[in-house]
Image 1 (cartoon, rainbow, N blue to C red):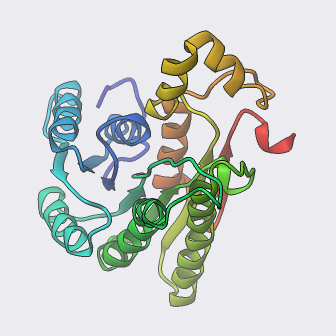
Image 2 (tube, rainbow, N blue to C red):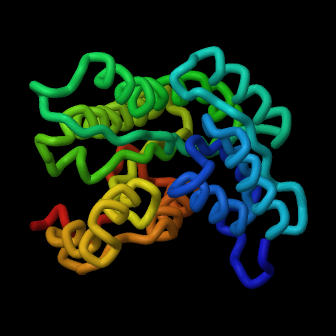
Length: 262
């Protein structure tokens, strides 16, 4: 960790899914820069290993580990969480970031595609919360951060499965948060809802229209007139993972340049 940065996540041990790039990689880097140990997973084993190695080089020490994980598979969750706890010496933060997009209105989407989206975007969050909870309970105060989307609230009928999955993540987050309060355990659960962020999710638009034209279309409904950057979300993950947010649970943190307000 750079000596110029405050150790906002010192002592935290974070498990981050979908960390081979985009928001997952940015969140893992941010947490490590602020003193956390991080365990990164992704279906792309080589790419996530490269991100972990980069984090270790930046920090000058082994603070990051990685593993291949299919977040739809329950056995993979059990095995990978156990490996993470062994590597880091515990688990106090879970960042459920893995997710995929999908196009298609309700009459066009195939059931197979619906199941694929729900498996990655919703089932994985439930499985993560379920199997991480015993470790988080042992590491109180602990935090779960679920990456949802502005699409949970602002609906585009061409993204039927994606909209539905992200709304489900928002609701699941609240259910988990209230279950923790009912148990009187200090494990918080919150969701983050970004608008378009400059990650791989916008690359198809750039490839099709060119970056300048695609950006104009993507920011039409954003009052701040720009795309978000990965660190705009990573800083929110840092806040919710840290003890700065000890009184925050069941919250929806919207990072959208004002888009939800219009």
